[in-house]
Image (cartoon, rainbow, N blue to C red; front, side, top):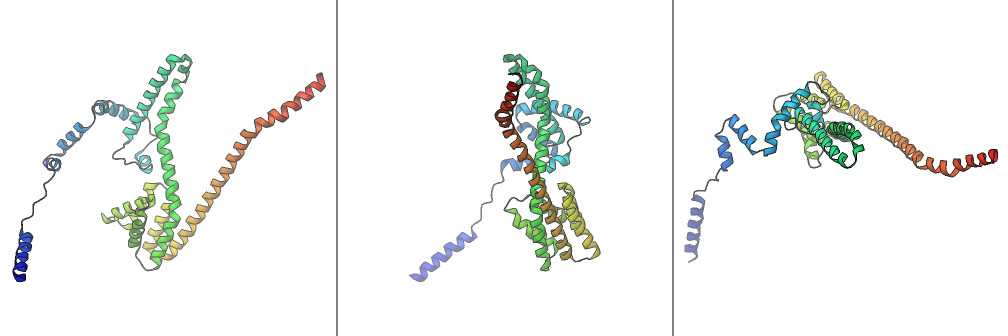
Length: 298
């Protein structure tokens, strides 16, 4: 009986193993896209955009193209350093946003001027401020990203020195560091991963690191990439180069902290003056001059 049960179970298992598996159906959208040309794909993507965007995009694009030749304060590098993808947010898009912001501000202030006519005097200033606002946002994001990368740089150089000192090649050390920093949302880790991607596509590691440094716009990274490239060309020990670079970046970090502390003290003095000067004038100087005036002319 037991032998018969085992035989039946074996037959069932064999039948399940040999049963033809159902192939997963390819999504309809993917199948449709695979049969389209590039122009048809672009037309389909254009049709999926909102109606207001399809109507305004040609006008905005023409306006942005005309402005770009005269207004050169923003480039694709500025957009990239602010953390945006230049392929999705182009210079023309930023210029269009600036123009639309100015128009919206003008319309809002004109509507406000219906109730308060004196507000008409503020329309030019409001339009100018709205036109500058996107540039201010991009520049502030760029500075914030640079500060974050500079704060992460000393620790990354220290880790790189530790890995290289144990005999790990530079490329593998960079891969290990980028893997460790991936979970923490590190900006420098993301830049290192991009450099390793360029290295995997055929660039030398020196060129990939120099491209990363130019992409971030940081002189400290350019010095580090240049030192590593020179060390590889001359056959100098990477451990000594990284030790020197770690000392340099940590000294620069202390100098930046000192500068920030001096700025805080200066701002604190300004706040104290604004807080205590009115009270000093009201409580001491006004009674003093009032008493002198009474004694002189009283």
